Image 1 (cartoon, rainbow, N blue to C red):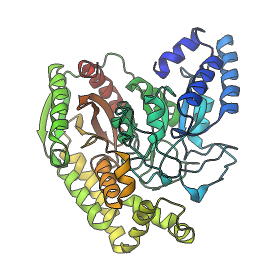
Image 2: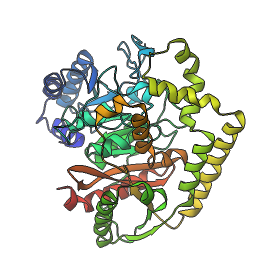
Image 3: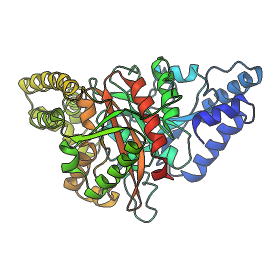
Image 4: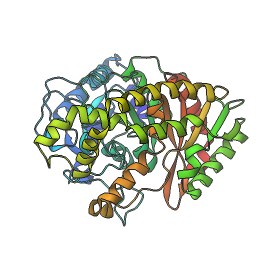
Length: 448
């Protein structure tokens, strides 16, 4: 069930929030005993919050449509009195004294905090592998352990495995959308600055964004509203009639497995039948911003090196080695590189707006390949780095250009889910969510 469906039943007093919290806590203990999805539970807090929600429901004084609904939180959101370690030994035993601002907002809306979900070191990985805590396997292959996607790995798995109805993650180069796509669920990458980063362990102060992972767009919409303090979009009467959509060829066709592209095109046929006007063509800003980052460095690597470089060198081995090396490698970039990078991103962001001005949405594949097996990635640094760069190759474009984006399930290919990424200019979450809801409704025949 979706978070909103559960919230509705709480409001009707058909479900008691205490029973609901105990149900999910029981499932987590049963199906995640090795704590590869949840690194730690916040059981005492969850039950106290559920008890308060039950009283409000009884009195008819609920705080929001999700009052009493339990959700999971990625382990980089500060949780008062509970270890928040961001997946790294550098922060082992770190216990904050206050909640992150977005967690405070969620608590004030009556949401119940189930626990903290797994992630790679400081969120610097699109595949979600963590050798310290173990890695929860992708749910779509029960024979070979495959990556769930990252860095919000445990967040996506908590939903896909029925251990939470919704989750809160972060997205710096794709870290909400990648695991959402590979786990067959919905993810929202908000515009940088839309949701407060206060009390969130940073990877990149200029690129980090917070977003929900959910079962559908309606849940993403209400959670975005709660976390940002902005009104939820009105999703009633959504339609694709006359909606202008550009399927970006650019890097999308070059990098994506042709079988996955074919599945995306099947989805677009449905959108066209629903009244959308679809065009295919390149978006030069995508190619140029990718080349810019390749030449002058990524903001995430440069900023992480600035923030963590000295700490890493003083504590070698406290991060997974390929992540340490990726961060420290940013030292080779000069001040001129950094200036060229940030000025270039600003210029190309404006160019993107001009190039896509005639369209309501720009769409493409979220993930160019299916999730790789975990084993070979732990045995070869080259294989690990290749998979990491593949995973962020398309999603990072929205971060570099300061866009907002969703990923929606778009059918299956070779037994794995395919994600369709929808992109809109920054600070246009309301329009993006309305159109995403219309697309979601139209893609139902592909998703069963």
